[in-house]
Length: 125
Image 1 (cartoon, rainbow, N blue to C red):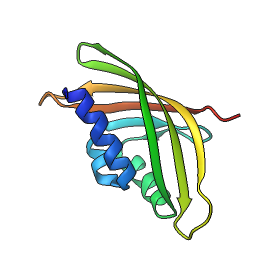
Image 2 (cartoon, rainbow, N blue to C red):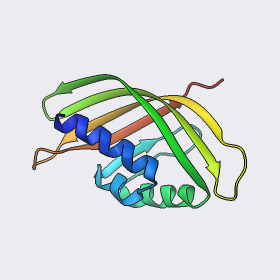
Image 3 (tube, helix red, strand yellow):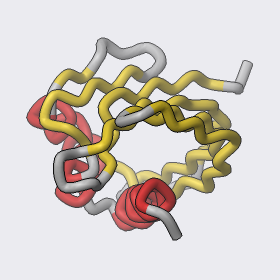
């Protein structure tokens, strides 16, 4: 498994475990996340706050499929699709949405890769 594939696997495992701190380690300090119907989250502190709020009220599971990886020097572009299932921590029926996303990742000085930009759109009509 190469370093990009390892970063993708680590992100997938941490996300499904609700490990916010591990997810933040996989992002640059100035990462930007753009999700439907919400203002951009800029920087780890904003991302942490939003994720902590979300994980306090729902349990999540994401089934992701990597569609394409393109590397250009110290940058790489990852196009993916996924189904995101959430269940209220108080119980209830799970709700699933299908989406597509794009990660722009950057190679770090130590050779590792981190997510710099993430953009997601919903496939559900």
